[in-house]
Length: 347
Ligand code: TXA
Ligand code: MG
Image (cartoon, rainbow, N blue to C red):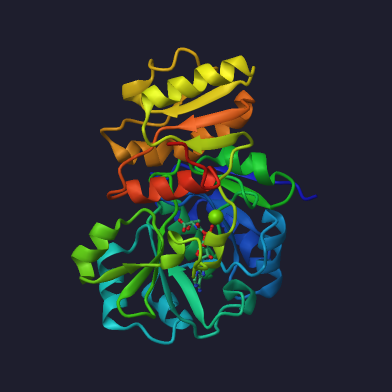
């Protein structure tokens, strides 16, 4: 057990890099400790990407399988060049268009970072976050920061410092609390070593946005086909799962109400994941949690992981979830929901 310090920071404060909180967190990283910090997607759990022992601490604190590589977070072009052997024109175009921001690029690795970051692969995942606290921490430590999402492996990713504290108190040196994250879902992971480039994990930047920037973009078959192994090792694991059994119900409200009536006879307590538009449509459910507005998919992404965690507090036996159109950010929302439900769906 270590004592987990919590440093509150205002992401809007001037000259963040030189504030006592950021300096304290950066010192921990330099000493080889691991700290959590907010990004524009979710909270990350960071350590020095160059030092094996620091990277091991991340895997250990999360309980993460060591064959699942980490994303390296950078703040400057110079750091990118130190980590990758080559940046071909399409990768460059993606960086110029979407960085800093919620896009991770898989590029050929220069072995500047520890082998344990890349899980022995010849490629490395790199991302330049836009969150001012993340940027300040990278600059103050002057390190490439290896950081997965700051949750215990299998849990929903953290979008609030409280989520990190709940999962990792006593396991990490500190948490920079910069309030709620923005997007609420993780970055899009794109493999730039294939032609065309391949989406390995849908996320904060949509396929439509990528196509607009670079033309051809393919999806990793492992994302949708059960007979294919996903190329991002992390996508094969159970993830984001609330404690209750969750089911996606594409046909929606009426069907969910039928299921609730049937469950009532079996004395199961029932949760429903819904939207602002339908909040009063499930009078028979024990816990109705609203994750945003159907007319505003970004609001759903923003609240999704928090809502999944809140179902655990409600102690329901089963959760029925509405589903969403798989367009724009909707694709990432449905990817996370489907993982949270372990693929279970009711017609
Ligand atoms: O938004 C995000 O990406 C957050 C914040 C903290 O930046 N980070 C995050 O990291 O979600 P993590 O570790 O939870 O997810 C990284 C994903 C995993 O699915 C991993 O398998 C994949 O990226 N990945 C990492 N390196 C890879 C590589 N060289 N080749 C293929 N997939 C890779
Ligand atoms: Mg994660």
